[in-house]
Length: 465
Image (cartoon, rainbow, N blue to C red):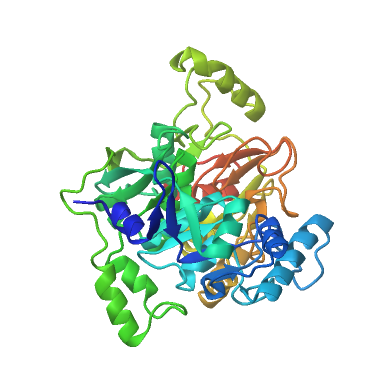
C-alpha cells in the first residue's frame, strides 16, 4: 500500500516528464518579502498575471521590526523589501496582510492558525521552513525564487519526487521534554544530512501525543535534518484544531473535507524507503553546543571529547568549538548567557508562551540577561493578553514585543552582538545567524525560561515539580 506521502503527491501530479521531474499542482503559495520581488518582476517581464490569485497569500515577516511597527521602518533595505511586497500584492490582486494588520505575523505561524494550511494540500513558499505546515497533514516544502515565479504563473511546479522515510517515536516524553527537544534529539542522531533526499512522516505514540503546536515545531525542523519536508498524518487533534478557523471549510464543505481527511493515513502495510524507530524515554531537554543544529546534546551532558569525533570531522568540530568559545568534553550547565530569545516560526506560538510563563511565574529575570519575547503573530499576541500571560511575564521582568521573525536571523533590528551567547528557541545556530559573531544555543521554551531566570544554562527540570 502507498504511504500517505505517495497518496498526496500522486493526487497532485499534473504530468510526468520522461526521465525528468514531475509537474505538481500546488494548492497554496505563501509569499514573504525576501524571496518574492524577483518572481514578481519575472511576471512583469513576461506580461502575465498569477493564474490563481486566490490561492496566494502574502505577508512580511523577516524584515519587520518587533517594536514601533506603526512607524516607518528605519532600515532602508528592510523598508524597501516590505514596501515592494505590498506593491506587488496590490498590483497582482493578491491577499496581503501588512504590518499592523490583525492577521499579520510569521507566515508559518499565520497559515495554520487561520486554517489556510489544510490536510492533503501541497503547500510551498520561498522559505526552507515551509515544512512547518506538514503538521497539518500536508506536503509542504520550501522553494527558490525562480520556482515562486513558476507557481505564480502556473500554480504548478517541476519537482523530482523525494523518497519516503518513516520516523517513529514510541513511548511517553519525560518531564520537561518538549517537541523542540524531540527534534533536536533526532538531529543529534541523524545529523543535518541524515534525511537528505527524503520526505519524512513522523509517527508513533509520542508524536500522536503532541499538540498541534508541538507538531508544528517538529515539522518546522525537518529541513535541519536535510529532509525535503516532514509531516504528521491528520487525526482528531488536527481536526479539533482546524474546526471553526477562518479559512477552514464550513457546514457541508466541512463534512465533505472531514470525510476525505480521515482517509489520509499510511496503511499498516505501507512501504517506506527508510524506517527509523526511537524511544521517547531516551530524550532529555536538549541544547546545541556547535554551529549547526545537529551538534546537540542533553542539557546536563558534556560536549563530546575530541577522541570520540571521527578524524575527518575533527577540523570542523574544532572550528565550531573555537567559534563558540567552548572546549571538547566541557559541560555547559552553569555557563553564563547574555540573551534569551523566545519566538520564531519554531517556537512563537501560544503554547510556547504558556510554557515559558509557567516556569518564570513567581521568579525574576536575571539581571545579566536581555530577553526578547516575540509572538509569532498578532493572533498569538492577543491570546497572550487574553490569557493574562503578559501580566505574569511583566511581573517577572519580561516584556512581550510585536510579531515578526525577530532574532531568528539578522534581517531586522533584533541582532545578537558579536561574542554574546544567545539561548534561542529558533531553528538555526549557524555562524552569524543571529548577528555577525553571535553565538547561538538552540533550546526549547522551557530551557530558555530556565536560563532567563538564572542567567546561566540550566536544566529546566530543576524547576518542575
